[in-house]
Image 1 (cartoon, rainbow, N blue to C red):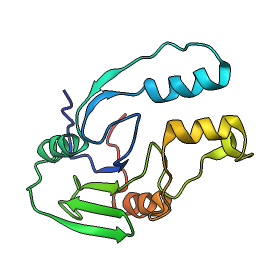
Image 2: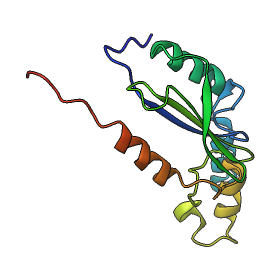
Image 3: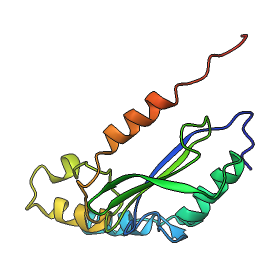
Length: 158
Protein backbone atom coordinates (compact mmCIF):
# COMPACT_ATOMS: atom_id res chain seq x y z
CA UNK A 1 0.00 0.00 0.00
CA UNK A 2 2.81 2.34 -0.87
CA UNK A 3 1.66 5.90 -1.66
CA UNK A 4 4.69 8.18 -1.67
CA UNK A 5 4.20 11.93 -1.91
CA UNK A 6 6.84 12.14 -4.64
CA UNK A 7 8.25 9.75 -7.25
CA UNK A 8 10.77 7.39 -5.67
CA UNK A 9 13.72 6.25 -7.80
CA UNK A 10 14.13 2.47 -7.60
CA UNK A 11 17.16 0.31 -8.36
CA UNK A 12 16.64 -3.43 -7.96
CA UNK A 13 19.26 -6.19 -8.35
CA UNK A 14 18.05 -9.79 -8.58
CA UNK A 15 19.51 -13.15 -9.55
CA UNK A 16 17.29 -15.50 -11.54
CA UNK A 17 18.40 -18.46 -9.38
CA UNK A 18 17.83 -16.80 -6.01
CA UNK A 19 16.61 -19.59 -3.69
CA UNK A 20 15.50 -17.17 -0.96
CA UNK A 21 13.48 -14.68 -3.00
CA UNK A 22 12.30 -16.45 -6.13
CA UNK A 23 12.53 -14.36 -9.30
CA UNK A 24 9.17 -15.64 -10.54
CA UNK A 25 7.52 -15.25 -7.13
CA UNK A 26 6.20 -17.75 -4.64
CA UNK A 27 7.06 -18.68 -1.05
CA UNK A 28 10.19 -16.82 -0.04
CA UNK A 29 13.06 -17.35 2.31
CA UNK A 30 13.47 -19.52 5.32
CA UNK A 31 14.06 -22.84 3.59
CA UNK A 32 17.46 -22.26 2.02
CA UNK A 33 19.08 -20.83 5.14
CA UNK A 34 17.26 -23.27 7.46
CA UNK A 35 18.83 -26.16 5.52
CA UNK A 36 22.25 -24.48 5.89
CA UNK A 37 21.88 -24.06 9.66
CA UNK A 38 20.59 -27.61 10.03
CA UNK A 39 23.69 -28.93 8.22
CA UNK A 40 26.04 -26.80 10.32
CA UNK A 41 24.33 -27.02 13.72
CA UNK A 42 23.01 -30.54 13.24
CA UNK A 43 19.54 -29.64 14.49
CA UNK A 44 16.22 -28.52 13.03
CA UNK A 45 15.64 -24.82 12.55
CA UNK A 46 12.20 -23.25 12.33
CA UNK A 47 11.39 -22.20 8.76
CA UNK A 48 9.52 -18.97 8.15
CA UNK A 49 8.08 -18.34 4.71
CA UNK A 50 5.98 -15.57 3.25
CA UNK A 51 4.50 -14.99 -0.18
CA UNK A 52 6.47 -12.86 -2.61
CA UNK A 53 5.36 -11.38 -5.89
CA UNK A 54 7.53 -11.93 -8.92
CA UNK A 55 10.32 -9.47 -9.63
CA UNK A 56 8.68 -8.29 -12.91
CA UNK A 57 5.40 -7.68 -11.01
CA UNK A 58 7.27 -5.78 -8.30
CA UNK A 59 8.94 -3.56 -10.90
CA UNK A 60 5.61 -3.03 -12.72
CA UNK A 61 4.07 -1.88 -9.43
CA UNK A 62 6.85 0.69 -8.90
CA UNK A 63 6.46 1.89 -12.49
CA UNK A 64 2.73 2.40 -11.83
CA UNK A 65 3.38 4.19 -8.52
CA UNK A 66 5.83 6.53 -10.28
CA UNK A 67 3.60 6.98 -13.35
CA UNK A 68 6.14 5.60 -15.82
CA UNK A 69 5.37 4.28 -19.31
CA UNK A 70 6.03 0.68 -20.43
CA UNK A 71 8.88 1.85 -22.66
CA UNK A 72 12.33 0.89 -21.41
CA UNK A 73 15.89 0.65 -22.61
CA UNK A 74 18.92 -1.40 -21.65
CA UNK A 75 21.30 0.70 -19.58
CA UNK A 76 23.85 -2.02 -18.72
CA UNK A 77 24.67 -5.27 -20.54
CA UNK A 78 27.62 -7.26 -19.21
CA UNK A 79 27.91 -11.03 -19.51
CA UNK A 80 24.80 -12.53 -17.95
CA UNK A 81 23.69 -9.20 -16.43
CA UNK A 82 21.16 -6.83 -17.93
CA UNK A 83 19.85 -3.60 -16.42
CA UNK A 84 16.64 -2.25 -17.92
CA UNK A 85 15.52 1.29 -17.08
CA UNK A 86 12.08 2.90 -17.24
CA UNK A 87 11.73 6.69 -17.15
CA UNK A 88 15.44 7.40 -17.55
CA UNK A 89 16.66 10.54 -15.81
CA UNK A 90 13.26 11.28 -14.31
CA UNK A 91 12.82 11.66 -10.54
CA UNK A 92 10.98 8.32 -10.43
CA UNK A 93 13.32 6.28 -12.66
CA UNK A 94 12.98 2.52 -12.09
CA UNK A 95 15.86 0.18 -12.98
CA UNK A 96 15.91 -3.60 -12.78
CA UNK A 97 19.26 -5.38 -13.00
CA UNK A 98 18.72 -9.09 -13.66
CA UNK A 99 21.64 -11.44 -13.28
CA UNK A 100 21.00 -14.77 -15.01
CA UNK A 101 22.11 -17.72 -12.90
CA UNK A 102 23.01 -15.73 -9.79
CA UNK A 103 21.64 -16.79 -6.40
CA UNK A 104 20.87 -14.73 -3.27
CA UNK A 105 24.09 -12.77 -3.54
CA UNK A 106 25.44 -9.27 -4.15
CA UNK A 107 26.44 -8.72 -7.80
CA UNK A 108 30.22 -8.48 -7.87
CA UNK A 109 30.44 -9.65 -4.26
CA UNK A 110 31.82 -12.70 -2.47
CA UNK A 111 30.52 -15.28 -0.03
CA UNK A 112 32.20 -13.26 2.71
CA UNK A 113 33.59 -14.54 6.04
CA UNK A 114 31.57 -17.77 5.82
CA UNK A 115 34.01 -18.82 3.10
CA UNK A 116 37.34 -17.66 4.53
CA UNK A 117 38.16 -21.37 4.25
CA UNK A 118 36.46 -22.41 0.98
CA UNK A 119 36.97 -26.12 1.65
CA UNK A 120 35.20 -25.97 5.04
CA UNK A 121 31.86 -27.65 5.67
CA UNK A 122 30.42 -24.25 6.65
CA UNK A 123 31.48 -22.64 3.37
CA UNK A 124 30.26 -25.51 1.22
CA UNK A 125 26.88 -25.46 2.99
CA UNK A 126 26.63 -21.67 2.74
CA UNK A 127 27.42 -21.73 -0.99
CA UNK A 128 24.74 -24.37 -1.50
CA UNK A 129 22.18 -22.29 0.44
CA UNK A 130 22.95 -18.97 -1.26
CA UNK A 131 23.55 -20.15 -4.81
CA UNK A 132 25.97 -18.89 -7.42
CA UNK A 133 27.84 -15.61 -7.39
CA UNK A 134 28.33 -13.38 -10.42
CA UNK A 135 31.00 -10.83 -11.23
CA UNK A 136 29.38 -9.78 -14.51
CA UNK A 137 28.10 -6.64 -12.77
CA UNK A 138 29.55 -4.57 -9.93
CA UNK A 139 26.47 -3.50 -7.97
CA UNK A 140 28.48 -0.98 -5.94
CA UNK A 141 29.42 0.95 -9.09
CA UNK A 142 25.94 0.77 -10.65
CA UNK A 143 24.36 1.88 -7.36
CA UNK A 144 26.78 4.77 -6.92
CA UNK A 145 26.01 6.07 -10.41
CA UNK A 146 22.28 5.72 -9.67
CA UNK A 147 22.54 7.70 -6.40
CA UNK A 148 24.56 10.42 -8.13
CA UNK A 149 21.73 10.86 -10.66
CA UNK A 150 19.09 10.83 -7.90
CA UNK A 151 20.21 12.83 -4.88
CA UNK A 152 17.77 13.22 -2.02
CA UNK A 153 15.53 16.25 -2.46
CA UNK A 154 16.03 19.20 -0.12
CA UNK A 155 13.82 19.01 2.97
CA UNK A 156 11.53 21.96 3.55
CA UNK A 157 10.58 22.90 7.08
CA UNK A 158 11.17 21.04 10.33
